Length: 274
Image (cartoon, rainbow, N blue to C red; front, top):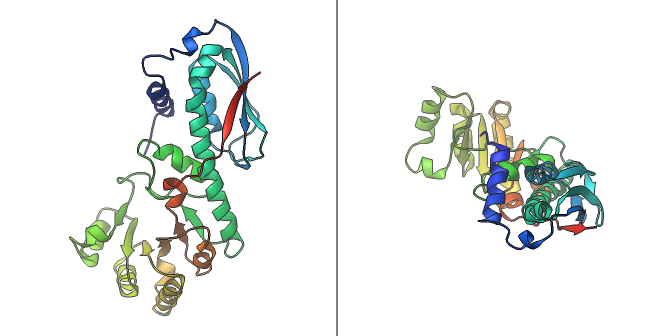
């Protein structure tokens, strides 16, 4: 999935500005300096995007903290100078994106740190449960926070899910996919289907709503049959900060967590004119 980031940021600005920022138009044509300040601790994400938003309106920007940095409350992350109208027109769009992306990066990083304490081989993956129109930015924030993006769009990889299996069988769909694609993921809901998918040549098997205990049993069975090393295993469904370590301990390769992008807890920032 390729996007034109500049075009998307212009779209965000246009959505907020409408026909024009009538309040800021009342201001004198005066150069001002402003700072964006963190109001919470967290992991910074979206600073490059925020900079570009201001630059689109002719402002000059100095980045003081880079994406991926740990930030503390009261730290300055950006300094902006430009005409008052330009700076204030961009304010909310830039802050909203910083807030959302930093929230995603922070949540992701917290989960990554929990996993590292029990299993260095499992990795966090984002899902497609993202806000429409924001997927690129949501998933970029996951990457900044230490996670991985998984597929960005439906054309990137075959992923056979439960509703596909309501129409076609595991065997038929995998065999048909293998004729055109090398990477095939399939969602299964029980151990027998996991074994069948591995035997048929799936490359990734998503263990959907399996408990950690069920995952452990399934992995043991796959090992006994000589199939474990032929597939990547993904845990998915109901995974959060409270139970993620239990899933990591099972030895799965991938852990997908929808809440890092569909239940975002933003990191607050403010813009202050000096």
